[in-house]
Length: 195
Length: 339
Image 1: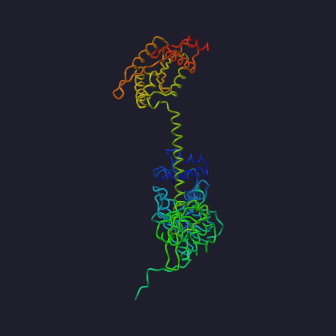
Image 2: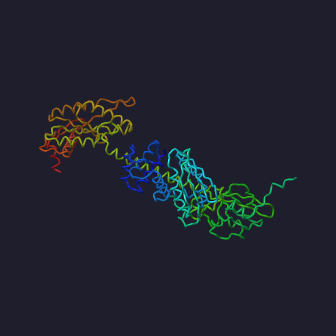
Image 3: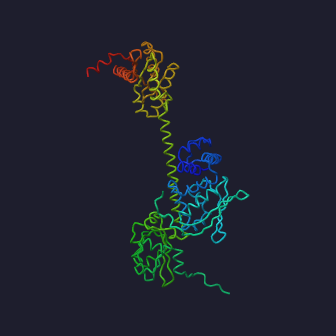
């Protein structure tokens, strides 16, 4: 797994909780390193071990923990660069949702060796979208629920999200877009300083 | 059934604005008829209609003579140009002539200054046609900046780790001998023993600078490595030899309080160091001067005092004409007292 993914988990634990929490998770997960480096690669099992250890240390179920990771990735000030990059996806939350098909491609444009899930978005009814997520690591549906909810807030849209796991292991997020202009959202200036 | 003529196309102004939001349409007379919405925004919202196109747009490259025919002669060429109202914002463009009487069309793009243009003119996603990859460039630019920052962070962390490792290192990387840090620690441990009994020798190569100056640093390094091998070979197990400076070495001899023994060791070291070394077929000669102290000389030996006294003895050897050894005695302090 790419260091950026592992580093995001580490950042979530350090920034949302504290360094002691991270140290304990690291110990329980038996990590051979003090911390992940964003630009290196690690064995996939380490990522899984960190998630399991974090759920255990924080006494949280996997889905709600991963949902918080998703929210953190978009809304925490330390991740403002990622939030900006996501806003390039579209001028409105509607456009943004349509752009999710391109998300993995866009990410690999910047980091060619990044592990990204296969994403496919369908607009199946007037205000309903279904996002299919296929990836080796279970729980991505929850991560996307957290991240998409934070993006909806960012755009000022009102939407409901629900994650499901299909029998073949494919994870789905169903999105009901209620109001595109529910609140004013956070400002995004295209030429804003790169974070 | 005949197909309609396929070499002409009518587009509404609205369609043009959407397809090419940075276009400028001018009449056969040369006056601006219309500018696309994004170009209007870049011009600071100014209404450019009615002005002569050559007053609005300055062609930077290729050079073009004044007048409309010269402008139209650039049809199809890759143009570098700018708005006269925004001379510091270079644009890229292309001009096509429209059918007689309708004038010409210039389509523009931001070129390499896209990032500055977007922030200076407050452009948004809506200001770019979906086919325009400027937004992707902006995305890539930000993503690259973020990734470059991550790489810099990694480099910084590696550098501090390297510096920390180096600070803790006990070995001289060139010769593999102990370094000053290791020698300081070993000497302190010896001084701290209940009954310190050891000898300390400070040895400095003679004529080493000449080797370095005339034969180069690689030859100098070779000589240092050879000298280190000799010193290592001549000491007993348990004794310590450290490189503490460019061509300076400190040797610590355990269980030693015999001045004659130190004298004999020094004589052997000097004579072995004087054996010619062959460098690129040329014999190369150095020697060494040494100064020693014995811990038993002091009532309560002190690390810095011993190093200092060994240093004085070494300089006495140098003053007596090099290639010699001097055992420290209080008499060596006498010249200092006169100062």
